Image 1 (tube, helix red, strand yellow):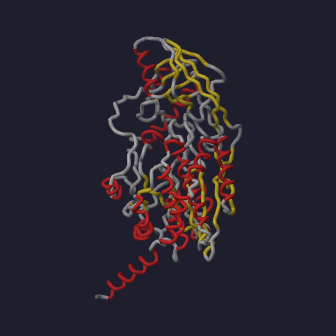
Image 2 (tube, helix red, strand yellow):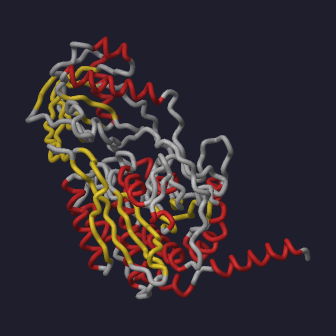
Image 3 (cartoon, helix red, strand yellow):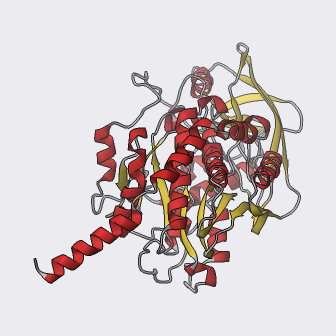
Length: 522
């Protein structure tokens, strides 16, 4: 046996011994997660009681107060709402009614778009179909929209759905998500949307349309749901800017596609349609700071080193934000409760962080990374940069964890494989992303803010369930869509990974520190 092979073999043996999961602790974690779970009670308070949680809204603030109190009750220290900087202006809506009154009465299923104005009482008006997608369209409808209720986009072409809305991953699909195809744009297992042909041109037209509608002063603008959906599900987010000082667009409403398409068909047949809306919305009257929620379980011999877990706390407003991201927040809160129940001092400090402003562009986590660790623009690192061991994130709905990604850091593969093994009976088996490009610009969710700065920002792979078909950014994102057993499993795995990271003799390996690079336009 040659010397080089012997050294490699010894290194592998040492790695396996060090990173073998502590089964006695895993057993305690599983028992606490499944026999004494509080996760659905946590979710109830985040959603039914305090949802939705649009950043800086009334619901967001009341949910944050509840979460801070809950974390303190578990015995965490340094629990607080940590300001990260200027967010913009808050937005709340407290009432929505939409009706078609002629040629026949019908209620209209929908809700207001965030950061659009209210109607200042009931408004009634003629519907006009004015789809606008080019600068020529704006010129075509100039001077024709004042006081009208305007349908601004083509209706959706609905097809009969022949497949279930909910889906669990097959073994074959799990394996496919492990494969990285160079040049494909797939960064590990995270699905990537098809690229926009000319994003700069899209942004220019979007801004031009917003300015056009503000100048034209329609009574209300309408769009169909932003995804192909049916059966009363409505997908929608914002129609205006959260930035303080930006112009406020006219009232905007997103409708279920069937109701929207009916109105269009009537108008295309020359039949007048009268609509009626009553929307109450309120903007903040000043530039506001926002905050992330943080709290810690202090470490022992390596207390200055930190392991972080979390997810984004904010939501959209069509429902109560249960699967996006009440589940991820509840999983992280429950994981901290489980770790406290072990009644042991972990070597490293474990910190929870629940982010604000994720839905507006990962604002809270990006600011946290800049404030605590490094700004990718110059990569001048702060003392905490060397002290963060890893951040583990949960933000893909109610589906159980089926694996974990390594974000291009193949040195994590054998470690995470060993730690995941005790959860194979629960369906968690895959470690993916070894060949993915590292340090991509922040996108999708909050662990990418960490990875962009060269830190170990880690995301879990989850079952898709109904996330893209029913609940993500929709009016159906309620507590009832959450699968109790799945989120209990997720909390157990997150707690276990946090524990093993906190107790590992050496910090987790990192990729080389990235070079300075301008932040992507947000």
